[in-house]
Amino acid sequence: MSTTPELAVLGNLLLDDVVREDGSTRMAQPGGAALYAALGAALWETRVRIVAPVGSDYPAAVLDGLAARGVDLGGLRRLDGPGLRTWLLYEGRQRRVVHRLSGPTHAAVSPTPGDLPAAAGAHAIHLAPMPWEVQRRLVEALAARRASPTAAPPVPVGGRRLDPAEPHATPPDAPSDGPSDGLVSLDPYELVTTERLDAWRELLAGVDLLLLSEDELAVEGALEDPRPILRELAAAGGRLRWILLKRGARGGLTYDVGNNEFAVWEPRAAAVVDPTGAGDAFAGGLLAGLLRGEDMTTAVERGVVAASLALEAPGPDGLLAATPAVALERRRRWFTNSTATEDHPPTQPYPASGSADRENAGERGLPEPTAAGRRRLGRKEPHRREPRQQGPRG
Image 1 (cartoon, helix red, strand yellow):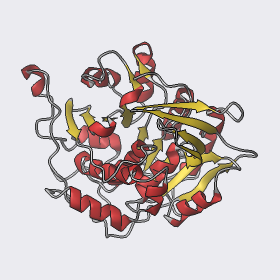
Image 2 (cartoon, helix red, strand yellow):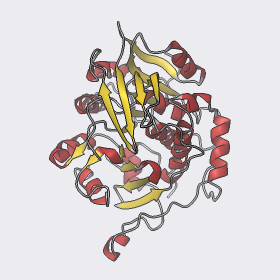
Image 3 (cartoon, one colour):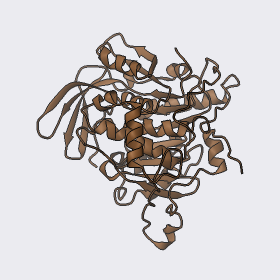
Image 4 (cartoon, helix red, strand yellow):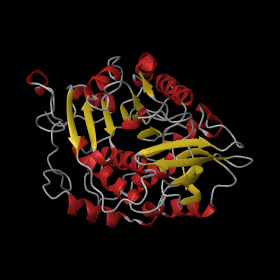
């Protein structure tokens, strides 16, 4: 392995056979949420490592492209045969993922607790969409490692590289037996349903940040007003500090759990060619911002820019072609009313349904986390739809 990563992305690398509503296809498109999330973070020159099994059929050119963009591939576990391959079917705004009839299962090509030493020392760990049971085992293993007397000490998430031109600080080497107690984010694969709320609450108590897509909310009324279900998901407490709901062409909604405040972000895109992986690229860009010590509003900007670059070309092509300079210029051009690190606009509050809710609707946009929230994230204190079939997301 090379230098200690700031971000470790645990997830899948797979091949998608894409079929669009107009009948056009793109076969064997390199995909997997780990690919897009890592590229979204690397755009902002974050040291990122992918921790994932990889099949013998995954294109070497894509792995070379990742390495050329600074992504650490030391966490890849080579499989003896081909990896997972899926049909990715688009119809309007809906998407369905269907496994190829032959090949390994989703769980078989997902990281296990045995892969966690590859994430040692990371300041943040992102669990990309994987089967619920896989994510549960990883969250439990991370909790056990944090409790271990040989675990690495907590590593602050914020306050290190506020200037994007500043070189990366190299943190001290962490013990090799497990990751440090940094931020843990999770992007679910399986649907959130009323029947599974208790199980989801128990799982989410072990993570700091939930990144949820609108089509994963299979709860009545959630599309019209998602705030009640987001509050329900956070009811168990624990580590959970933020929930971000990705709403595609409608932007997204941020829920600050500690302050019970909501705010929306607006969508931006230069062109929309292929939505595959845009939500995962958003996650990577967002985490890159948080790792720079930025507040959530500012970090969301990085996510929006990363997602826009994923949208404007098929598969990962847009992200592989983009450079940090392109991303920075787009951010400066789009977010011109900055009051923070590099320019960020005021975030519009999520419209409250009534005056009783308006106090907690985030009228001043996304607030800086509270002191308790910073401690929970390991951050330094300042001075005073139709349900889809089972299969990994490409």
